[in-house]
Image (spheres, rainbow, N blue to C red):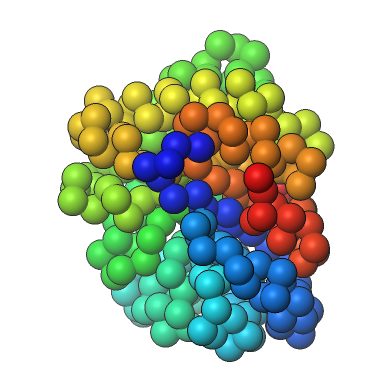
Length: 253
Ligand code: 13P
């Protein structure tokens, strides 16, 4: 953590939570985090639960993220969701290029980049996800993969838009496995991402960029992760599905 950057704790609910369950989770969470003022709290329900969460959290200190969007404004794209639809439900953020989407749904740096551009054009704040697989790490390709994903995801993004971008580093081998990257391992990659953004833009932009860590973050390990100088937040799957554990993450010391 660096006092210059506001921490951002986000829950990625993935394909969990019906609209009814989502409403219940959100209403239990509200009082548990109501006094938090110095960090951003974000919930990422599946599309079908966004409306019920939006209604529940109205007027609170919690904001909403979608888990995906389409890069076109509207039209014949069966099964897809537009930026305008998300904005209409009060979404503020959108998670883009999660490794599950890259691995199972054919997302590439090119489609990820189109989505980042579309979100910025429409006024949504992108959370751009990057991360290497275990095989890539073991083959010594960590730097190449991260550089490629950061450069590809941010292609043609103007410097003036960069303060709206959040990057999430999620090593694929740490997602849902209980294997967290050590705080040192995570910080090393965060520093690499910041270095890359400095080379692409400027030291000032790199300094202001918020980089979240994701992959088996729990109430037990969040504080040591957040104590690292280049870690500015967490993107949390499993531990975000219970109000008490997500609240504990938000309230990290
Ligand atoms: P887990 O916290 O369940 O490992 O998931 C991390 C993640 O993929 C968040 O986007």
